[in-house]
Every structure is written in C-alpha cells, then in structure tokens.
Amino acid sequence: MNAILQNLVLLQTAPATTGSTNSTGQMISTIVTFGLVFVVFYFLIIRPQNKKQKEAQKMINQMKKGDKVVTIGGIHGVIQTVKEQTVVVKVDNDVFLEFSKSAISAVTPKAEEKSEVEKIEAADSKADDKSEDKPESGKKK
Image 1 (cartoon, rainbow, N blue to C red):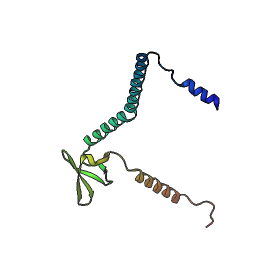
Image 2 (tube, rainbow, N blue to C red):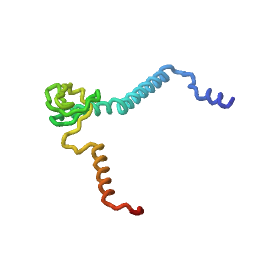
Image 3 (tube, one colour):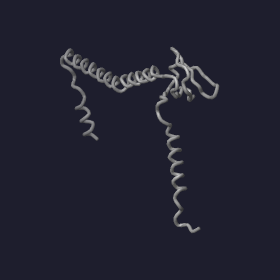
Image 4 (spheres, rainbow, N blue to C red):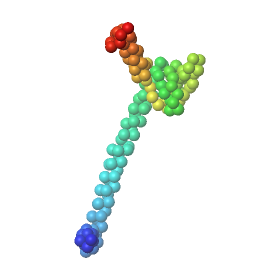
C-alpha cells in the first residue's frame, strides 16, 4: 500500500520554479484537449446528423404520386397529390389525409416489388402447391 502511495506522489507535478513556463504548458494542454473533444463530437454527432438530414431532405424532394409512405405517426398510405409544402395521402377507399412533407418518415417507390410479407406468403403458397402434387410416401392407402 505504501508503494502505491509513493508512486502517486511521484505522479504529481513538481512545483514550478518559473510561473510563465508552467502556465503556458497548461494552456496549450487545455486548448489541445478542447480541440480533441470538438473533433470527436464532430465525427460522432454532428457529421452523421447532417448526413441523415440530407438523406431525409432528398427523400422528401423525390416523393411522387403513387409512392407508398409511412408518416411519423405510423399511418400507411399512398400519395395521391404532391403540393409545395404538403402531400395528400390515400389511406383507405375514399379516405384522403393531407400531411406536411416533413411528417413523412419513409417512402417506398411504387416501382419496388411486393413487400416482404407478400413475398413470404407467395413462397409459402408455392411450397403448399408442390407438396400437394407429390404423393405422400410412407402412408398406405
């Protein structure tokens, strides 16, 4: 335990004989530390946020009639009209809602294929069709 305490005493800075040299070194150390903190914040927080904001703006600018959208409130629908600041979304038969463009959280272009659920259901139905065509082995009729 005494060895640890002696090492801690050695790690402490020695009293400065000249005040200007030590204070300048501390100032440079502080400036470098703040600079490194700023660089870390830029690359971990500011830059990814700006990138995400540009992607969202690009998505909003590329919206067109017929695109499937999801709003920030979770409402799913198809774009019927695109206006300057808003979009009109068809939610159900004869149900149209007007949203601000910034309220759209995701856009699926109409050119894309079926959703994942529809793909899985189609694959299941194909598998069922194939199993019905093959005779069941191991069972006696």
